[in-house]
Image (tube, rainbow, N blue to C red):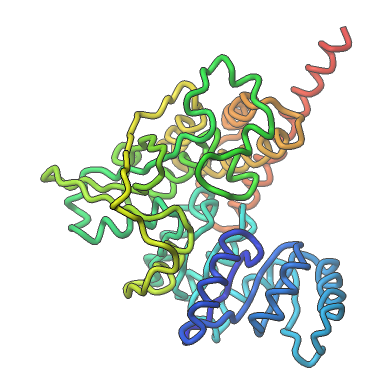
Length: 400
């Protein structure tokens, strides 16, 4: 039985992972659950899965969690070890009892624990884009030294991982990632200035967290995936392409040098790639309904509009620039998306803030996780200042 440390147990990936564990209790157990501040859901997970270790973000959250466990009537003798903070996250990911780490914490908060798990030679299922977007060179260098393979959980990279089994890596001509196109695929660029928060959160295919949903609408999420693919599969940006595929049935394609293209298709349910990562190289029965090929089906593919989706172009540029540019890209995007969700920034303003932040924060090579996190903090400070300056300018014009 494999013991799993789940970094991000209360998020959508975490919940889906626990559903796989629920269905495969003879093969997996939840050794450690690491979460943020959702103590109510976390308490329910503790009662059901009985982990040995639980880590939350703050001591205050731990106090709330204890209160919730008491309210649920779980005897203290049955509680797991309850910890909080970054050091405890690292300990959960590197514990000797842990066999597999599922990295699904949103943002750079999961970087330290995932990097430590790589160095500790744990098997890794990677669902956190920011780990490689912010620190790809550092993490992949550690993976090569430790011999750890990162199995991607994102549907596109997971699909690419499967397609690559069909041939030799040196024979790959290009990797093609698909994008749904989001809710504004057919919206003229001139109308994007009127996009509302609710419209941007209405994704046509996937049900996800707020930030990733906005990133999908702007295609920044696809830009992050391009960066992640470059690191995961050791490919230059020129060999990683994006096509818009509204049906989201094809997740990735790999073209080999003889012109053959291998595609991976599956239903739009994240439990498929999660189970693949947990069981690789074995394959178990599908945890969800299979695609019905007896139904009429149309598959469409279109080139992305780089002018309308400026953030996708910025992602390519940042990856080509190298150094810490992609770390700054991610940090600025998170700040800008948060401001948009708070209705302090327009939809086009997201890309404008990211681009301006990239010009203000110099790119350099980070030699440690600590340096990466400092660059992240610096980039966030600059991005927040830009957001505030834009708010001030708008207020000044309104006042006149």
